[in-house]
Length: 296
Ligand code: NDP
Image 1: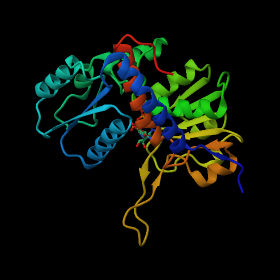
Image 2 (image 1 turned 180 degrees about the vertical axis):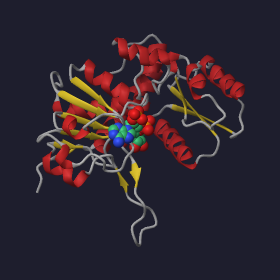
Image 3 (image 1 turned 90 degrees about the horizontal axis):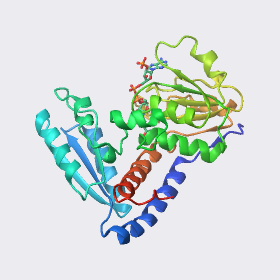
């Protein structure tokens, strides 16, 4: 039997969503409107369509306005940028999210760059990433923000902890490392060229795995007592008799339970935090745009 605590991201996210829903009426009485999130989906990628639908549902459930824009797969770059500019100018829209990946003929960076930083609830524009690096207030990508909330809730003060972030994407790894640095952790960023990853992971009090490789991080890589945040979402091939394969993280959960002091499960860990933090970013963006103090 392991003594590891299972960090319940689903329950934490439900609490966060409830607090956001409670904050919406106060915003509405101060401004006469509800916060609004616009989500843009280009093409017919099935997984993206599911994400967009669940974002819309969660937005409405929190009492906010959801604006969905579905464009055909052959949408031209200028048309997409024109829509982003229209949303930038729309007073009822506080957050803009362009669902990635975009069809290959579109320039993702140029589209993201067109989003007004004050409405950049995905935290991906150069202004948002720059503000994070500078330690200035801005909008932070949702998955690392949610991961940090879980860590702080579980550990409290992170100051002085050795942390390793495996993965260096703009969406997860890099902002995660910045957030941990801002909490005064000593941060190692690992990636596909890192040598002897196991030895580096063994030094870490906090391990954040954001790789996209099923069960790559093994239990015996961990320092005893490490806190593990598993960002990965990987679907295994279906076992015999199954129609769909199981979802697993980037960490080998069963063996990690033996040495970790706490770990996020997949599903039910970081995943639910991502949408909750999207709502949180939308609420924060709405307050800042209205000249109000950030909600608690
Ligand atoms: P990317 O593919 O953009 O980045 C993966 C990173 O992992 C890269 O930096 C890559 O290194 C690194 N990497 C690849 N192989 C290895 C290896 N063998 N050893 C060490 N590092 C390696 O993925 P994302 O950051 O977008 O996502 C990571 C995972 O998180 C995925 O499983 C994704 O599904 C999941 N995810 C989950 C979310 C959630 O809500 N829970 C939200 C977003 C993502 P290099 O840079 O050198 O190529």
